[in-house]
Length: 122
Length: 358
Image (cartoon, rainbow over all chains, first blue to last red; front, side, top):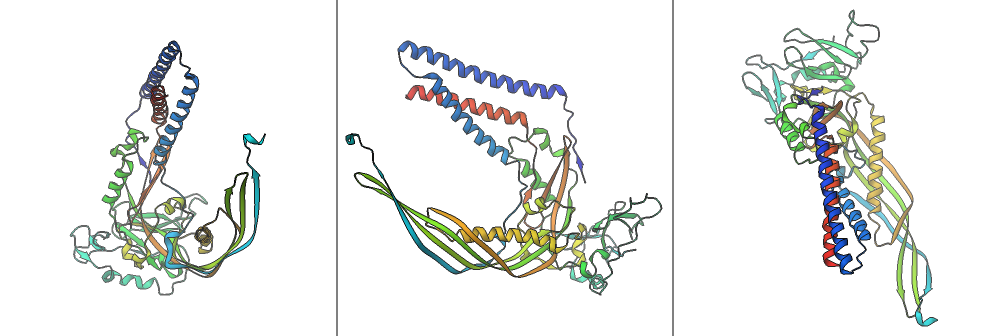
């Protein structure tokens, strides 16, 4: 039994508009980011501070995209609810699990030692 | 030709369907309500030793060779219309008059289910559950969420093998405990090695394994659990108004899946009894099945499917508990927008903060 959607006819222009909007938003954000970086470089450069702008930018982008990847992965995961059930925990009888043997036997031990490097060793 | 049974109202001869809210048979015309037991006298033929597995007569004359394999016809008692089903069809509605019919031949002899869990949820609840399922999904294409597209939902009794098993597990592990300390000159690391043994019993009850090739096993596992304590002795009256199929997967095949699930569960349960170690590694593990039992039961499932962009999306709701599952499509444009927008936004914020703070 298949249900055919009463789908609104989606013109090619509609999806083009959507992608154009995405492109514009990303471009705006990128421009804003680069502007801030340029301003900061100029300001701190003139003030004589060594702020290592490229490294900061790289670290911030790495953290930013890691967080956004996690968030969007969670959002994407909500769309998938059909999963195999490889376990049967729900079906274990109440008090249906009991141990008859529970032995932890010590065998042997090994000890390693490492000298601590100190400056007064020299 | 196989006998088909239609439940008719004694008052007005209207069609009777099983009402999940009342848990009784209800007339669709005069709203009279009847107990299932009161109208189950026809079920006596199911256990009357009819061991014939001879399927109903195939359709002839109008089909090419091989085309009729697996197809069977029945005649609706209400309108005389020809109902076509496949070899596993057990209950359905007449496509002409909508009358619910039960195909008695599908439940005779060894084909007779032991139990059935009657529907506890209604079609309206299934529709509502689908609406809720589509809510809050930011990356779902907007057009998919339109309510106009849902037009049909089918209540189906899906056949399951239900297994009970008593097992004995014997597991061995290697564990280590690590202790570190230091003095003025040295750092010390002491590793103690242990052999760990665990043995015990694990009894599982009523694991359901879908035994019809028609239904996707993963979909059926997703809507678990089913509460078997609500199961009742099988009566065909429970099927009135719903679709039903009989099994076409033998219990030995289904037991392989059940056995795997039991073994995985035992592995985790026994492993969880080992604690207090830095590392634990299983060196051996055996699970012995001391006894097992299989029952054949029908479980209620609401099924609906839809096609969008050339893909079929199937949704299922547990007809007993109301648990709803179904994969949804991803709007790639929205995903890209969120990924890039959030990424750049957070990066910009962090960058500004870093300039202020450091």
